[in-house]
Image (cartoon, rainbow, N blue to C red; front, side):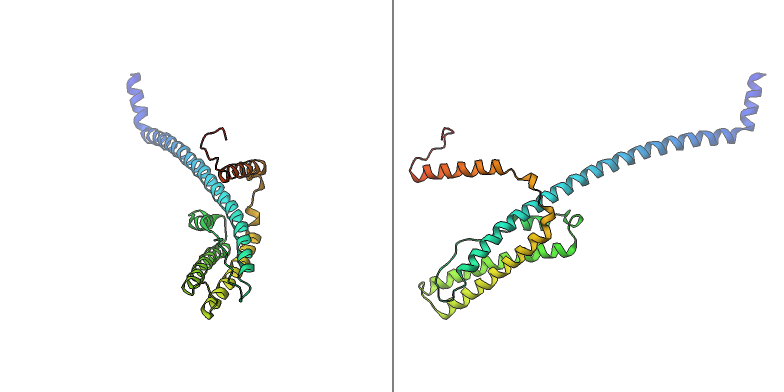
Length: 215
């Protein structure tokens, strides 16, 4: 009799029972999906932070590179200023880090388009300067290292391109100064390495070269 009453009640309330069951299943599914979504969001957030940190460190290196290139460009500017001189400069500015930063797929999340355009112009200006230095050297060689109208034109071209690099590097340093993190640069360690290089160079000049760690 009790079993019959139970079946009767279940029959009368079957929609409520089924609905309650479905709600429980769906709720459990939603909770699980929310948990999975939250896990993915946290992982994506952590990955984004890591990408941003790597991009910012790259821009820190771009600033250092621009400082060196600005110094080189200034020296080239001075060397090629005199149209009646045959002096040459063997320095070649390098934009390896800046080019790598420009290719970084995450760079737009850190730099606005106008600064990215400036970075591209900076890379192009260095390439143009190095090509003009090579052309000037080739002209000098072809003229037997003598003064000529062609050499003067090539020299003037180098001078103008060096001014471009110096100017763009200067502005780039202004625009990216907020991305320079002094804490990333260990000056004490850098000086130790510099001193070590000078020591080994002196040994090499004295013909006391050895690859042993006792040097």
